[in-house]
Image (cartoon, rainbow, N blue to C red; front, top):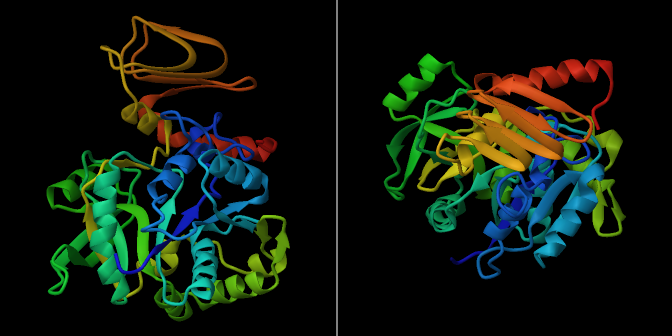
Length: 356
């Protein structure tokens, strides 16, 4: 590769669908939910090659600053950490990180990765990055699409158009589709739609220019909060007043779905957003009855179940397709096909008292 890539790692989410294990003070990206490392650490490992990648820019918040720092140190990997004073979704975070990347290395190629996702195939991922880097250098915004393996209703979809003449592995984007119902998800699979992985590649100056066109209010808030930021030890603390002037929008809604510069590369790697307990079950090794026992857990005469215990011994008998999560202070039991509804439960619980 001619240019080194600047990783932009989004690490400020809460992961409320994985309650009660995922909390405000210890969200899912910093937990070892699958494997021996957190998904944040697994993402760092993807961008660890110094011949390909520059210093990663991590965006998180004050509650998670030390976690981001210490988990990177455990891998002996240096990072630059920006602290959001409040949650404004991914658009503001990406705008600020792009401004930092542009200041440090004008016109640099940046790669946005969500640290609460998991990618198993490092070689396939690297090939996808290699395919996207040249077209990103030409001024396009590259979205990583993935061929669906099942009709997921919790993912957004992309309908790819015609391949680019100069870059046959890259296609135009005909349409973005938000999370569909099951019937539509099946139809999208049959028509060759792709999952939108939420990972992107672009030149820092190009994405800043596109923010200026499609989301100038977000760009203004990002620029002002960065200009008034404070250096707090190893962390860059963004200005709260200016940052909170940014609308709360995802990058997709604010820019990606509106820009004419967006193209898609089809990734050939195994990926999951592990955004809910049913996806944790799907991504984990299982016994002969399709069960997953994690932590201090026992499963007997049951099928298709997940038991995850961070505290007391938790056992189930004679159940099918049930998820049971226990922590020292909370217990959740939910049917696997209702796992997406945990977020709504958490919203109701927040109305009564904060969830820490």
